Length: 408
Image (cartoon, rainbow, N blue to C red; front, side, top):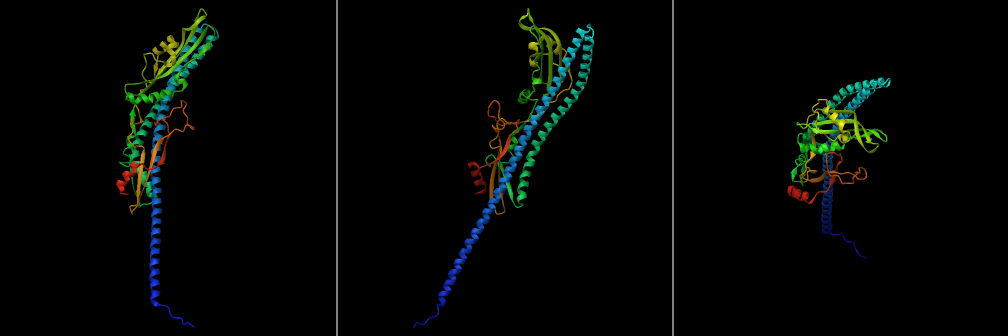
């Protein structure tokens, strides 16, 4: 029968030391994993802040571009409205002259002369009252044009101040302990130094700067302003031809001066065959916003079809004597700076842990939603509010600059 002996005390001590070492190693690993998790969560949080800040800045930039595009459209719309008022005044002047001529011809005819006399009186009174309305409307819309121009300049000047405040507000909403920096041009230029150079103020005093807006405005005219051409009466041997239109000119100060002309003539065939030729002017009228015209213009083909009555209209053109002033509008620079439509934001905490995000403002016209009739691809401009923000990955240049700046 064997006898049990007590265990060795020294062996128990070695096991305890070994277990303490293992527990210490496990604790260190646990602390390391926990610290790595905290670092990862903090990095994810910083990246979220950077993404929000950069995207919010891009949203503000796109809103500015869309505001400028809409206000440029508003400038065009108000100019088109002035053209409509001047054209309507010219049309009423033509109706008044036609009624007067008709009264003179039919005055010796019983009953019919009384009707034409009453008609002439009514149209004359309507025209007189409408002229006062037109003057008020032209003054009002000229003031609106100047107000829109001032609003564009104010926004352009204040945006450079408001944008950094916006970014600061976004970052501070997450944490007051975070700091940030914003760049453009591959992370080289401070933000928004290049953004200031993307747009420019243009003035209609400059002929070249006014030309682009003039062309777009003339293309935006309604059919009544472009050409008021049709036949009042058309029989086999005779027809009464109505022609007219509204034109745009610039005065010496760069203001846009609208003028319109309308004419009506009797056309007939010689010996009942051949083409129609103007035989008798029936009515005419012409109005100018400010300066009377003394030279022929298109006026919807008035001089080509109704030469006699159009000459009389031009000679008797009336003026509202409302001198237009030049105005500003915003346009894109022809040669944009590299990376001027981007914003790159770096966010840091007190532990010098950093995250970076980049957003871009793009002009995009969705073909499925806003298709062009001509099928062409539309380049970026400030006449259609189609600017939108987008988060994009950092480029190789961005990463290289950030590595050098933050020693990542």
